[in-house]
Length: 91
Image 1 (cartoon, rainbow, N blue to C red):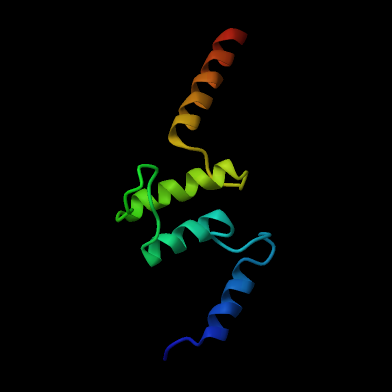
Image 2: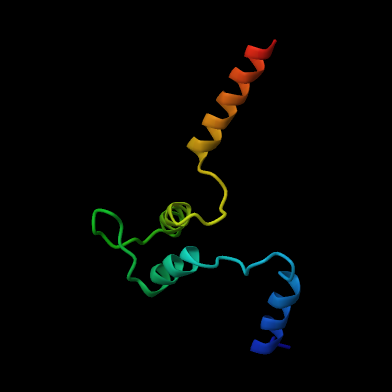
């Protein structure tokens, strides 16, 4: 038995109630929609064909827009180095 549209919308409403927003809201939704339609371009102007590259672009634009997304690998590495330096400085 296939789920109808109302069933899916109800599930999304129930599962994300209290989280404040639906998944991939804002920039993420916009950029991934462009990728799906085939209109997403990279900074060099070439068409993006890789889902991974599209996700990277979407996350980058979402960070620039101030949305709450996980930090980039470089940002995480810098945070770890700062934590180590702080710990060494205190001991």
